[in-house]
Image (cartoon, rainbow, N blue to C red; front, side, top):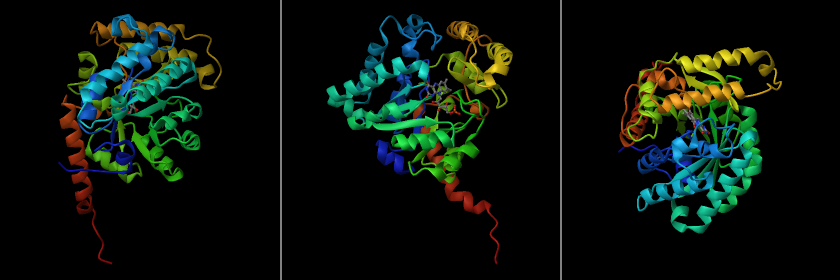
Length: 365
Ligand SMILES: Cc1cc2nc3c(=O)[nH]c(=O)nc-3n(C[C@H](O)[C@H](O)[C@H](O)COP(=O)(O)O)c2cc1C
């Protein structure tokens, strides 16, 4: 198999410069196992696991999705399951912990659980190598590096990238506005964001938002990134933990069929359907105060729209289901296995980079 190796492969200990993005509300356990076995970085997502202690920050019914275990037990069980599945494979994985201010009580508990599990079990330490923080201030989490973990932080702007570098992160994920789920109100897309971030920081940069194949991995490298993080593309894989209705929606949607609207902490990019339109209608009603950064009294309306949307999702009702996804849905038309997807991306990037020179007309003088 052709290989593309960059600095981040050595920092993390992976074969291919491809990261799976954290993707709540699922634990993404099966996806993480498949991605890590394929030589990229699989990631467990913690956000949905916090629903029992932060019901206003995660609008799912945790019992319906995960059963009765408390969040720290859910996370430890996932870590142990992924570790066990990777035993003897050389695969490594990470845990994503969003650190938005609304989420901090849960973030603290999850980060402590990651550190405790790594420190107390050498088998876990062999495979669980990465903590990815996102959606908030990186500074309070710098201590994780002392425990031998690679620390990655996700940012939506040059300002936040500089802040992450000052906090001492090992890798910065620059996440463009076309990406699925959490985005920023200020729309800076990957084509502008990735080269701008790569130029001002010394820390290696990974590009996120819109990446899905060999051509886009090659493009990310040309823009100064050392790899890509993908969310939406990994939803539509055989092994992903997502409901069939969500996977099929990703395959069927074209690039215009996403909408951004208010989420429980910050704006989100949804797959367009009746539910997303209702959320956007609510967003527009609150917009005058919201865009000026003034407090909106309550999230109650959004919360109940999202809650009903998750119930509809689990019932398989595509028009009422709450589903996040990036603009890249327009470039996703199949449901491959993770191993063949990763292999195709790498092979596609190798041939794109090899052949690009042939498409340029070189002048003789
Ligand atoms: C369904 C879904 C859920 C997501 N949940 C999270 C999350 O819990 N934490 C996080 O840091 N990012 C989350 N993201 C963002 C992804 O990690 C990733 O950065 C993004 O999907 C990249 O853009 P793409 O969708 O164009 O690949 C989510 C994305 C999707 C599509």
